[in-house]
Amino acid sequence: MRASEATNHYFQRAAKQLGLGSRIETVLMTPRREVKVEIVVELDNGELGVFKGFRVQHDNSRGPMKGGLRFHHEVDPDEVNSLASLMTWKTAVANIPYGGAKGGVSCDPSKLSHSELQKVTRAFVDEIHDIIGPGLDIPAPDMGSNSQTMAWIVDQYSKYHGWTPAVVTGKPIELGGSEGREQATGQGLFFTAEAVLADHKMDIKETTFAIQGFGNVGSWTAHFIHQAGGKIVAISDLSGAIHNKDGIDIDALMRYSREQGSIKGFGGAESIAAENLLLTQCDVLIPAALGNVITGENVKDIRAKIIIEGANGPTTPDADEYLIKRNVPIVPDIFANAGGVIVSYFEWVQNVQQFRWRLDRVNQELKLLMLDAYGEIKALAKSNECDLRTAAFLLGISRVARATALRGLENESFCMVNGPH
Ligand code: NAD
Image: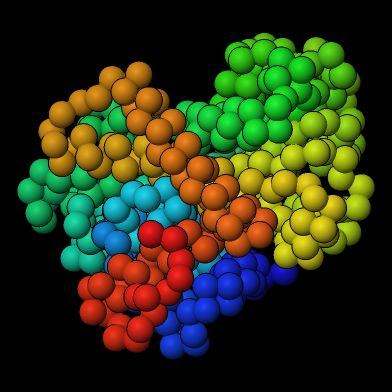
């Protein structure tokens, strides 16, 4: 299934409940701007390298647009469009003053030298510097880009506009990055898991977890759950999956994976078939690697009692419908993995204020925003008798619709929609 089909499906399901009408639906579905540029740089061997760069700016009714920059050899415009709109709903659900965007450069970073990557990044900024900025659109790292990429963007952008660290987030600490940004998505997922378990009167120390993915999101989520006494019985990464019914020692696995480059061969667990990870007997399943992994094909064999989405778009709509019918709560990506963009917001706030927060303040504020959003989603799910994903979309869409109306960007009466405030 194409990424945009799933996003559209979830959007339409909530929009129908809100009774938005086709006019405003069209406004909210359509990206405000799609920019494509050619990047030409001299490669190390003297030849010219030509790459395509793009930025999809989906919505800015609630504030400047926010979203990652991918450096990948196969940038799929359909997926990027869909991810840009997901960012709009995610920032609205988290109630941070942003819209949504996404972009990238079609290149294979593993085939470019450090200096070639730097040239590509700077040339991209040369092309788009007038459409990004702290009050316009604030990129961040995504697949294939990192804090170094953000540092080059700050430097190049600042040549045009003066010193402006707030143009991107996910920067190195030395250039205005925030404490806690690296682990933020995992930290937010952990706060989510704590709140969901409390609702189900489950003690984390008696709860078993399976996590797909051991990269940034999966490993930090596992770390915080392990630290709180939760038992992680199965983990996977690109190299395969491992299982230990007595719980995996996550600190040891993190050290092993850092040294070896993957979890393959870790001594403290037995290896299992990668496809069985999602089917593991556990209380909580956390997909934290790829999209479209819980599908109509495997959903009937999933044994977890609760699913918390760490990855973007891990559940296809048919699997989603099936799990709803079976009363398996799914905590949706647009809320559960919002910790990263929330701490990006804190980074931007610190840059604008020229004031640095300590880690404990970052985590305290992150927890407050996550719990506020969770409380609102639950209340909407109850009042609308719907699942958590539909409730999250109701919350996000109604906030964006109301801001759009209040700004006079569309003159329909949908500002009176019966949605949440
Ligand atoms: P990452 O590249 O750091 O890690 C990805 C992990 O998934 C790696 O461990 C990789 O080995 C594993 N993986 C890849 N293919 C796999 C497969 N077929 N089976 C099992 N594991 C596989 O990426 P990340 O930043 O951790 O992001 C993971 C997901 O979370 C993505 O969907 C991303 O869009 C989403 N996300 C990330 C953030 C963030 O702050 N990093 C925020 C929100 C959402």
